[in-house]
Image: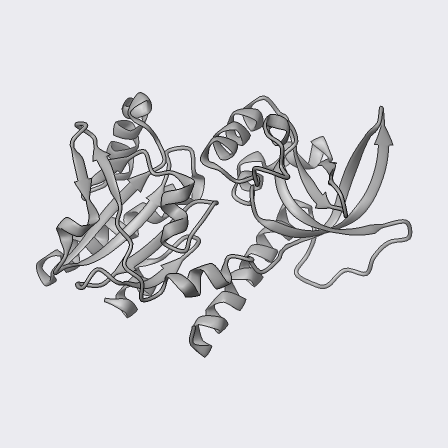
Length: 282
């Protein structure tokens, strides 16, 4: 990883921190802890879906976890900060009012490691956290991203018609492989840039491929998404957390990997990618 990459990563985490500050009503200026506040470090998770599995055996962040979090958000079930202790995890449920103020933005950070400063109250054996300051921590997946660079990773998924497609079939082209889902808000935001890259660079041997976490059972939603965002590149269905991980990404979406003409991974971006960033790599 180059110094420029590290600089970009730092800017990315700063941007996430500013967004999270907006969620909790903070400002860009550093805040002094208030009396009685605590600082917690853990993973932002769905306070209900967390209990779907033994988290000692199955880490949170699978595709099923993320989809469950989206469903729970629609039912006004707030997320929580899962803090790991010596023997188990302890959940601090986010204040319901803070969550309802901007549910969609909270979902953007499900699965990410965060540092939360706020006040804890206990009600009926549950711990609730009213947040004063919240920031995203550097991902432990940084080493995973670095390890993926230069490796050859295959991906085989079915297209919208149920026909298997393979990434290796595009050998000889530069592939912009974007992992997304219809329920992912930031995924929608980056589609115009991906479509623009497809238009501008296709003649130069660049191919954008959209690998959706949606399955064939939600094909109608995918088709609506394609129409609304004017996607002009191939869309494959059924991308899993394990698929994303092989490309140094995940578990949160979106994520993009640029694959060279020789099939080797050139770049991974574990968040929204812009046309400007892509053009620097093509």
